[in-house]
Length: 391
Image (tube, rainbow, N blue to C red; front, side, top):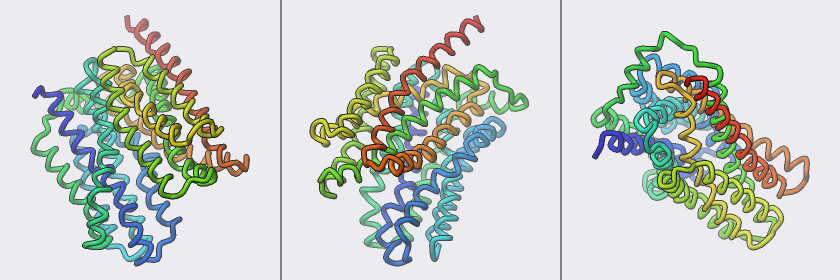
């Protein structure tokens, strides 16, 4: 196996620990409600706390990677993830669980930002769209793994074992990185060049546009899976049907992300792929909002097209940043992701309250998805300006 593909396999495997740990609270939710007396609002807060640190830690995580080296920061992140899981498993109530969840969330950011930069180092100018599609699928795969095993663990050993299991996978990922991963040469170069912190303004603007694309894509997906169930319930579907459709759409995103990476790599035309995906997903959301056709068809269609541009968007920072700026630049990029996760679903809830219609969040999600197209064109124009200036 060539070095870059070996590195990708290791980094992807390590990142599955994020999805696994994220899902642990949901897997233990019946016991947390029954034994600790948590409310469903408490559960929602615990789930959201995993992403909250990203708003404050993403940029420092990139800076730390540039100063100390990406691998060291990633290993520190895994240690914090493990510590947070252990702390949460010993909690006697909401406060202890929240403290552990926040600590794990900080570690997750310190892992996710440098790992993404490390993949970019290995594949910049090569098969980066395909590599990023594979790499980003690690999160839903980790969630799927947790769904398979944590329900049984909760029944056999209780909720503390479920929360603590996140520590086990984080430590396994830590050992994998320590024993099997060989750093890319740009990791050492970035650390050596840490005395210079200035990134050209055009490059900052470009990576912000790329980050906005990524934040909007993920925020729109969060709106769809978060608000579609209540909309489908109002349309007369039962809980079992709603759960099946939402789960099917989520797993189809995993498949479509991989398909999108392969198509972009084979055809070498990421722009048309993103256009088809954005228009197709917008059409599915509008069909769902207007009840044009069966809701199942709109949900499944959304899953089939939503993942197609994942690798395309994740590859954009490699076009916007110099190698020595990638560590800090990826922190800027991920800041927009966490802003989308944290800001867009509440906006959708506000829109629904104001409009008084369960379809309103779906209309908002459709508008957000459609906005990907002009943003992508602005990014491509900026890259062309950057190339002319360099050339």
